[in-house]
Amino acid sequence: MILSTLLRIAFARNLGRTEIPFEVHFTNGSIYKNKEIAPEFVIRYKTFGAQLNTVFNTGWGLFESYINQTVEISGNIQLIVKAWADSGPNLAEHNRMSRIPNPFVRFRNWLHELKHSNRRIKRAVKNAHHHYNRGTDMFWKYLDPSMTYTCAYWKEGTKTLEEAQRNKLDHVCKKLRLKPGETMVDVGGGWGSLLFHAAENYGVKGTNISPTPDQNQALKTEAARRGLQNKITIQQKDFREVEGTFDKYASLGAFEHAGKGQLADWIKAMADSLKPGGIGVLHFIAHDRPIDTDFFIRKYIFPGGYLPGLSETVDIMSTHGLEILDIENLRRHYALTLDAWAENFEKHWEDINHVNPEHFDEKFKRTWRTYLALCAEYFRIDNSILRLYQITFSKGNTSSYPMDRGFLYDQIPADIPQVVTQSTLKN
Image (cartoon, rainbow, N blue to C red):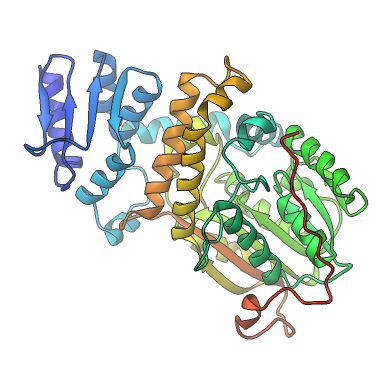
């Protein structure tokens, strides 16, 4: 009885002020309702331990129990995030926080960093394998055909995820001002979509830096199929081990894997890999200022990860002689991207399960559903402190980069040979 009373108080305080009607059913048979109308989502506790987990670990205790099947949630789970946002701090208050408010979650986050820090390369590689080295087939089921696993670019008129990802790849290539014959390094290039786009549409020679064998093998196979085996090379290495210098640098959605104490290592390696005057694009999920990264994401999805603060990133870049040319925030684009991934995941769950029923089981389904659906809503809500930044920079001050953004909206130059291909990475 005491536990259900504590939970009633917690739900009333943390979600109760929303206009979204919901219900919470406790193990003793009692029910909390915030409104006397039909609920849009219902939370049902199945065990005493699940209730205790929520008392101590608040929202992430709730979703942890959902993943472990000791809580059932009916309705759209994104609405839980929306209800929390409706009842929570405003944007300014949220941004002023520098650490996780719940001391129990903060302690668990500290223990996680102690065990999973990316400080050592061996551990960093293991952390990368945890998420990305699951075979290509599972990811193929919910990504677009290019297998691009980063925020898409939903410019006006875009109707599909595939089109939005193609927009993003070309948006980045235009920012880099690619020219035929130039060399380009992509750190954390996944299955190679950016390198393929750059090689086929802009005539560059590319190098992928990644520690994940599954992705690298798939990239190698696809490069050969496209006839790009002499234009794309792979260094199966950690970001700190890049060999060579390049005309252009790109990293899309990998800087988050540097880890809390390794941002300076990443940016030093980034600067070292560029020739003087070279141009780079760093694309990453971020906060505006340093703050602890969400524990749920670190434990279940990206161990050792850390969302950099924009302020600390820019500060470190300045100490390595990098000039900031442009910063673009694509936060709302990521909400739409994650919506599309979440929809594809649900639509193709049976196919994902059949890839490996023992690995892609009910717990995995709930984990990935929580990851994709909740992240989509976190990027959408009015008080979200999540950002998706693209920083365009040069090594040293530039005198040749365009002084306005008009060039970003031009068509691909007519003198660049274009090859239209269809990815067959699923094979």
